[in-house]
Length: 204
Image (tube, rainbow, N blue to C red):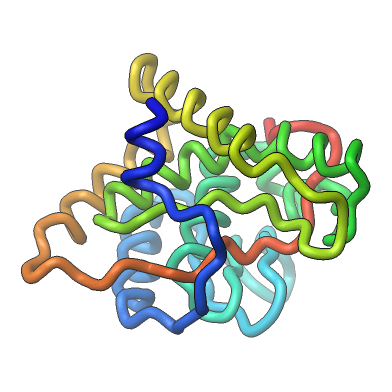
């Protein structure tokens, strides 16, 4: 597994560039999940999930700054959020921002393993290189290699046992849309752009 990690994952954070495939990704998500009344929305600041309300008739997955990787990261969280969670802003979680201590960082990594494993699969399905996000530039130094191994192990479990239904649906859609493109499109170098972490476990 270690060799597959090194071949398909970039750990260090590279320069961020707005991705020309983002409009296609937005259209793909919105078409794939029209039955969920949920749209992927390009945001200008922090990512957030907003349920439908009196001013907006549909749910919104808002991702950061037009980055392809940020969109996949937010989609992965949505794919494991249950029906009750999807009725709440940011799935009803309280967020702990960058600057976490060791225990807070451990809590972050625990709840991020499943969504980042799904994000990894989606990234592969789009023909890109995945980067784990430990997302704590101003806090305790994370065990990046250990976290990568944990995410990789969860990815292998999903591949063996099956992905959550919405994740599986979108992985197929990504493969059909992006892996069939020629020539092979540029890889996404932007790190995940979720700058805070839910406390209390995975969405259910």
